[in-house]
Image 1: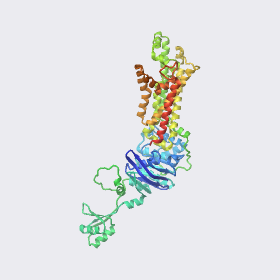
Image 2: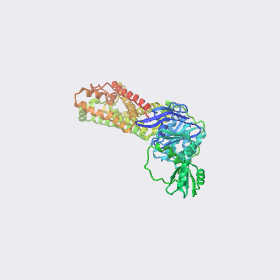
Image 3: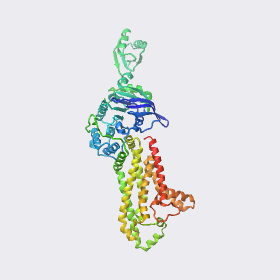
Image 4: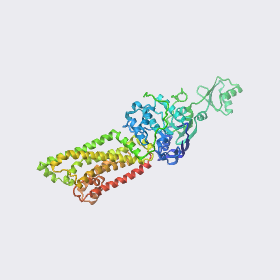
Length: 315
Length: 290
């Protein structure tokens, strides 16, 4: 259980986290979603007691992190940047951290096996790939058999097998009754892994909701209609309160009414239809709609490339 | 990487996890210290160079005994006279090099954690932070005491025949000479603590090393020139209070020059700086974001 109350963090002029209040419950995977620079990592560092909140407070399992007597047994964290000295081997790194809590070497070897690092455990971390570094970070997080896991961008740099493994691991840990808090800037990743999602943008909480509701609520359904009597149908639809746009190929793009209602109105107005297609927006569309105003770094608009796989490429 | 990975993270229930204690943190810091090649190499090189300096100086002393010209030259050299050249001076000669190596080693113990991000792992495991700082302090001070004691021990043994011939044998029954030898260990251990504190306050490797080299190496040289060149009393005052100039009095033998502090007073000045810096480091490490 993680509970943040009115949590804020200011770096100079910049308010990185702006008065956020949320709780992360045990037994489910909670996604922490937001664009780069939205305040995800800052929030996670404050939970871990690494950064001091400017105001507000955050507790883990009922206490500020630093007040736990065996913090690694309470929270295991994978932090975004590599937090390892490149001159040590993976095993030495784990052993040093294990020593602070009297965790035996058998457990060190266990988490090494568990994360698939057995072959490289005695190699220096400096030569690790991004994916191996992530696995080591996850090994560190699991070391103390913690009740709460905080994983900052856990699938970054992992190969597809690794991505799947992290997803299953997160779900498994949550099923065991643990609290799993996992950040990502990819909606699709969160949709596949998490049950609940907290969306953050420009340091503010934009949504705190079950994943399913976010997908249903934020994705506005549209209907695509083709007809030789475009002007007539558009007028009829607008009278019913729909938003109608004429696309380049002459089809009508209707928002606000479902396909059945559009068909009825067309019949009522004696309009011939050549096409009537419900179009559901993708997860990414939903996410973009939610965070459009809260993106820290905007790219110049580029012509949209038609998406072939709704929900992202790594589904 | 195509390693096989288990699909579950099932930790066997009952993984023994104990609460964080100072001894456990100390063990962790010791593992960190000994698992970096750079620290191990620096330690070995420091010891070897200190023995080398002693051996070289002892050989020069011995050569000069059979050479009246050389002896006369040395007796007229103000630098050598100021040093009050004795057997202990020969054995401890390498301390001026050793202090730089030890200072860098001690600063790196902290700054390498900040430069690599390791510090976040350290503070996640020891969120109270101060136990980690004190454990690092114990590790670097004890390591320094061991390295320097070994180096001096070996230097004592290998220079013994040479110094005997030169009539400068170290007398371990002489309180002043024993004070100088133990003082060398004490001085360098204190330099280690001083440097750890500077590293903690500055966090950046380059900045910390620059500061330490300036304090322990550059400033004393500048002041030795300034003091010789001017009659201004303040230069003497500042010079004798420099960390290294004050602290290394504990290694000196012979009468104390007017411009310098008594051995224990001088060491006390360095110790006071060190305590003040450690307090500052403790406050900073608790307050700052990692």
